[in-house]
Length: 297
Ligand code: NDP
Image 1 (cartoon, rainbow, N blue to C red):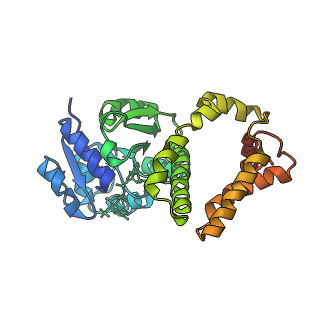
Image 2: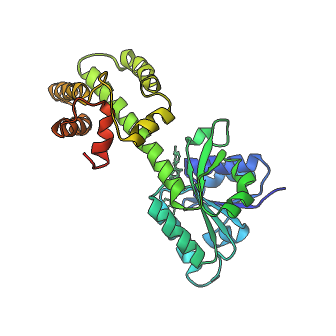
Image 3: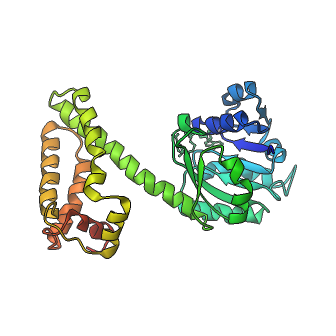
């Protein structure tokens, strides 16, 4: 069965999403603030709506792929705020795949309900070229029955991972994953700046650094092992103590300073170790930093 779908927002993610839905034979209507970004999709069979009103009217299922939630209000606000079609969102299902805060998702769900629409939050966990392909997955949260009704269509974007009815959950999971990802990416760039400042070519360093990162699971066990440790609130072990790791964090700050590169990132890391040592917990395993980060140190 084909489902009519409207897609609002044609950045790299929106375009990849629309292309994936079109490949599966669904009728797709698109709208974008910058209309020219729809050209390739129109050539592939999408209908470019002339206005957000027309785009919303075209389908029950409306997928949003925008920079943030404010962009949704900027687009849909004028659609619902009076002429020509009050009630334009009545009975619609909004699936917002844009990044924002969990509270923004909850507020948006209330806003949508106030206009007669259902709301599902989504967080796409792969970059645009991977959308719709093997390995793509998307976190969702919101009303289960609404999600279930559209699951087969949403599956075309990536494997749907439903987290629960609280609309903030998908955003929380998305952010927590990106917390790991963004920090890791920044640390990779900082470390590269550190070696290149000493005359080492980035290409001589980065392949080994990536191998090293992939060894982290060997140190922390699988996610369940680490979770048990953190939930237990105890941090035994003298192989990688907070004091030893903190000394290394300190050395990284010094070397960065000497190299004349930015020290904000290693200083932030060092601060947690310093805090653990100051709290008299330097002889515990490095995982004691969890208590500092949670504010219980
Ligand atoms: P972009 O920021 O490149 O594109 C965003 C879209 O939002 C564009 O279509 C843009 O329109 C539109 N937009 C922004 N502000 C407004 C506004 N005020 N009014 C109307 N339209 C607006 O984002 P991406 O396509 O890269 O990503 C979309 C979402 O997906 C983001 O929230 C991102 O965090 C998330 N994401 C991105 C990934 C990636 O690898 N890129 C991976 C996973 C998730 P216009 O074309 O006119 O500028």
